[in-house]
Image (cartoon, rainbow, N blue to C red; front, side, top):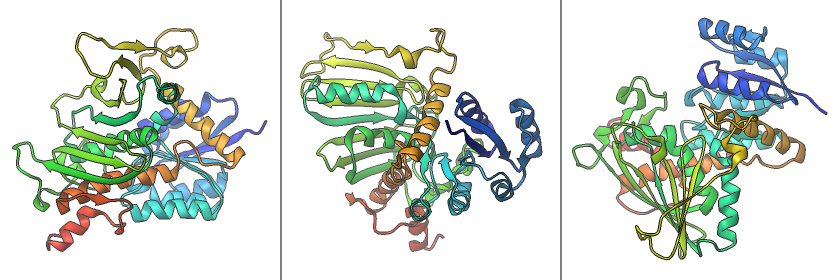
Length: 375
């Protein structure tokens, strides 16, 4: 059995999570890391017993020559390391959102294709065992014809930041059930109820210094509608509740004979409601998949599901390498999720339905600023 040598770029919180997942797999060896913060680098080195820690990711790639590199940095540092790894023939597992604009994301996929390397994006919900169960129920007609999705963010962030932080997951999860998007129509508001304008475009960390470094964002509340090519309609709401609640995050899949609810951003809670109408006297039935809900000893996890799902993500990337296929959470899927975010902003800017794929691959908010003389 081949042992895959894996290195990690960015040794903060997600770098720790990914390292745990790598070390949980007998088919993987954690061989090194790269981190510009000396304190974090020392802590990670001591925690995981890895001596080869670098302050320059290109030196790490050249000296260690890993089979796979995990890029667990924030979005400004996804593009260049992905190209550097691909050009060296190294497969890549990259955090989300995959890039700062669609032009970068497109190039990341193209360079990986050119060098015959696999690119996976950490859309962790893709590997939940609940997804196949939901898809099988739909295929068997348990809720009739799937006609609509209703998706909701978990709150705790204003919508612009949430779109980049959690919207990329939510939009990718929607695509898993409904396929490719045909068009979007979106409306962004500020908390006082007025429409968001070009003057409300801000850097994500200007809105919240503790948030991710995701560049320009817009909107405090967001209402987005999508039409999928297969005929399913969808709404996604980002309501900017002051307190976040992960149990409120997720998707309702609405059919002609019932509906399914899937909730939570890492672990999954699932319910089914049967009947043509959502009547209050007809309750929800909760569905459990014990393999995902419990650890090896059958006891619930404190951080239920994260290590389990991160491990599945690594295993799927390895299977994609060996089977010469796209990972289930592929770079192409990452581009499509980013496109939905860009469609959301572009539709609001144009005040009309906007079709995919977008012709302009630059950042729609940067373009709006330039056109208004604010850029």
